[in-house]
Figure 1 (cartoon, rainbow, N blue to C red):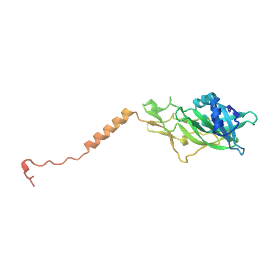
Figure 2: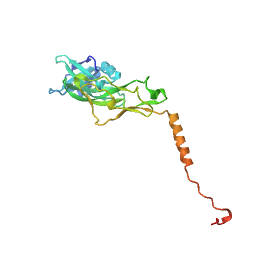
Figure 3: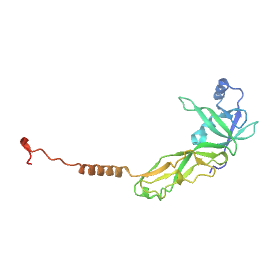
Figure 4: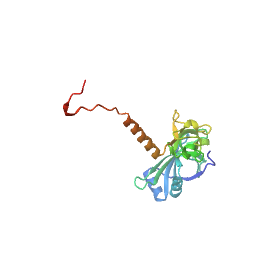
Length: 222
């Protein structure tokens, strides 16, 4: 489960429009906006270096932050969009959504794998494929998981682990209403190729033979 909610410090941006945003970037800030929660949108600036560091750590859009802006009450927010420079791929604008503790939101949560050392399929040479490195869940803002864990300790070659095999955090559920595959154990490529060759050999053996015509155009005896 998610631990302590990290702080995200910002300053209120004076002025609006493209001119104020460009000035913020020249000052080493990234302009942004905080919206939702039955309150007026709040234009903000976030230090570029701090934002870039957080983005590079990963899972920025699935992290609940406690936003601190001088002159305003602290508010829980989650990132809804990061606009980037088309060439440099650096952040140029960021949008945050205000949340209540009971707010339900859709988030992509990372998947971790447990039981690899005990997995009989892997011990027998199988290959693990993580079909879904992330799964989209409906979660409560006050209870966002850092990740979900899929246990493969009992899987044989050819077996799969589905969402029904995963213990989800209380109050969360998948957005997909079916038992989809998260991870599977496949046969090693060499074994799979051998199986294909054997199938081709069997198919060749089963091809029916036809009688050859007699030489010199002679008619076969009745």
